Image (cartoon, rainbow, N blue to C red; front, side, top):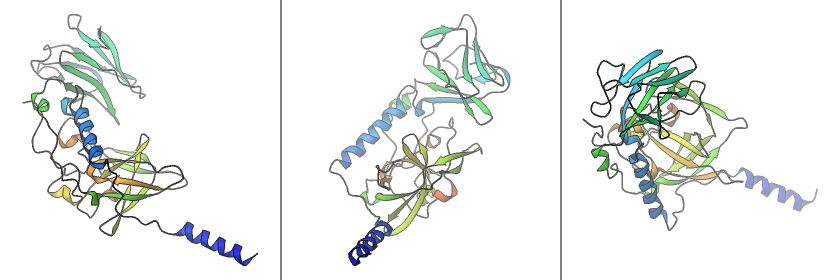
Length: 305
């Protein structure tokens, strides 16, 4: 083997094994504009007719018939003044949840009045949505639990919502990150506020630096992106106690680098609504660090009295 070939191979080897230099990410000229667009889209998503902030109830069902309406005599009691006293029943079986409606009550599904409709197939089919005036609801499944999630498009508190308090934009929290993957994707155990646990697929671990210190976060699949549930020291005093959420783009083809923008870290629905079942940060994602970026803890309730 020639001396020059040996040198080329040695240089190639050094280049392949060199550690990636992490730290602040280059800030694009449109960065601030893009960040404000992110929060504008978030505001629209939260406050639309079936946005998280319009939630008005969460009701866990029992096997068999579950009567519903606004009367306190029902098993499922919707808010008074928005629906008749007695409307019908949610009938839960091992295979489905069927909504049966009284003949003189006009509940619609896909703009058609219904008397009986399957709201949810227990094997995982997408639920249907039912409406009555300003109310809309669907049936969800959380492990062994089956429940009704209710929205009310009428909510003056939400109409006046202008955004959660958040930290001033700080590009020190806009950082490069290296995705460390496994040949066979691992799963990570994620708990929710109900105490349930679920094994979710992880694309890998993101390694990054802030102020010269190295940290890592386990990711889970979030559609075409990576979803991360993060706990940090600001949870003790300024941000939601159970952590915050963030999405991160997958690295481009041929690269293992991406960017984490902690200025886009946002509150999970549980921070402002008691009618949700949010996921909690895994132990590995509870950072010994104050991430003073993104949304702060909500300062008021948006639930109608």
